[in-house]
Length: 164
Image: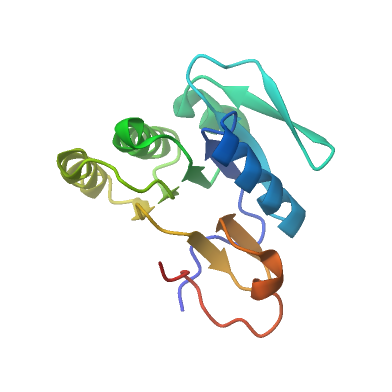
């Protein structure tokens, strides 16, 4: 099994200031995921509190990846904006690091938007896209990027990508 999210992976959360982003980011921090910050356009410079820790927010994925050297991102943005968030993340990972993992949790993204986003990601061979409309990705017993009760993934869990 290939491991896409290593134990020390640095994760960004796109949409971290929203209700869903904040809720699931809090659960990921509780599980032990190494969240290094978030990205919400127009909210750069703000911070969010998760599990008693403070996380910075950037306006763009390019700035966030440059500042944190993030390895992956998880996307919690509304459907009309999700494909653009995927493309922004893919472009930023490609430009800054040459590789990265983009996990999109959002469901209900317009089909033609996703056709465009998938074609965009395909032209960035170092970037992997998981989703959309998925519960996330996990390295069992190590890290979670997405949603799900952490107790389900401790000890003995053999899956690598959570089925939707």
